[in-house]
Image 1 (tube, rainbow, N blue to C red):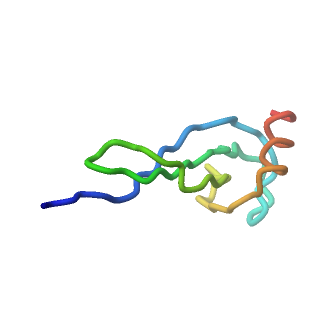
Image 2: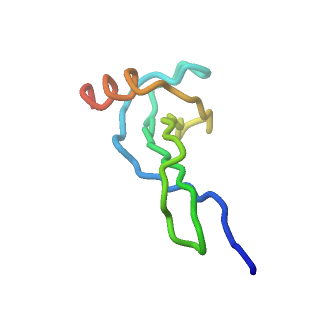
Length: 78
């Protein structure tokens, strides 16, 4: 019997913010993204395997992780 399983990530943009970049200190757009990971069986997503939040700077390309509380606060501001 052949069993095909794995993980797949689903990304969704939650907000676009215009704040200073933490690395370059220039005012730039920051993209807040939620990435949900799911366990798949035969390419069908079944069980959630985790969620993380990430902020991407469009000016310098810096990517950094943020926790859920900080992501919610950023969404409220945006």
